Length: 392
Image 1 (spheres, rainbow, N blue to C red):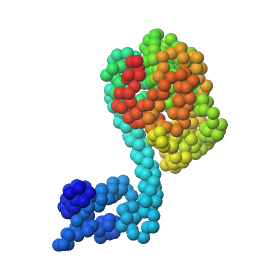
Image 2 (image 1 turned 30 degrees about the vertical axis):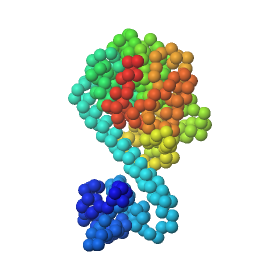
Image 3 (image 1 turned 60 degrees about the vertical axis):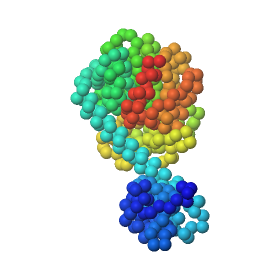
Image 4 (image 1 turned 45 degrees about the horizontal axis):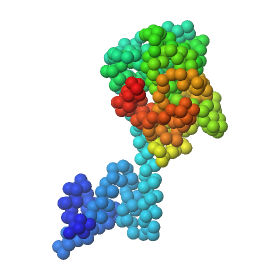
């Protein structure tokens, strides 16, 4: 007998898909799944098509599709004139709900992972301080081997703690809080955190360890800091991996530039609105493959007071000079550099900018795990991918 013609009893179906027989009977009584055929004794007889339909039902139920929608999808609602069209509509809407929920969970997971890594970092590495003319830079060191600096803006030690732990078995890893971030708190009269100023801070930190070249991984604004470090102090750079520098300056997109400028201008008086606008225009909180685009808007939750203050500083003082920074292409060509972007960052601002930079430099754009925040959200996978780039 062909498998398609095979019939199954309710106990067999229950074992195959992991639903109790009583649950199958309940779904049938509620009209969520069509009633199967019956044999001469009245026992249910499920076809292979029935089993696959119920298996789909399980997936839809586990991912939160409303039971009324499931009933329509499975065909239990026999009033539908275009079942294929309705199923497409239901699945499209359900996929959108799942994507939104996944992104909410990803944001929560990223925060939790950063906190776990931060507490772990506090237990395994001590905080050290570097005095600058107008502030003090906090940094941490762990591991042994070639000197490697992980550079972010605004990401600091907490954002890189998990990645640093993953890399510490192979490198002597230095992480630091950029001025005004984390333990490197802003002080009155401190210079604005432009790429030029941040590069000077980083150069001073490198000099604290060595007068010679070192390895660097820069993500987001940290990648822009490294572009300026390469322009000013190319002798300090042995190899630099740049992950998604968000250079709006490289995109021929006046509308995007105007939106970014408006967001930064609003940061001091309305940081919630500024954060929302920058989240929407960057797309960086989403996971988008080659055939996907980030949604144009997804409402952020109300930010607590501490996060609002951080966004006043980041969006109001740091982000503008970073995204509108114009890199020196010839200076960048003089260092050993790899350009990479999240494999799930397609059609997002930072990946587009990194592609534009790669095209100007004549370099390939290398896919990395995750999206814009892959270094902190997927540290083990990111570490495995970045080590060959540092050692090439």
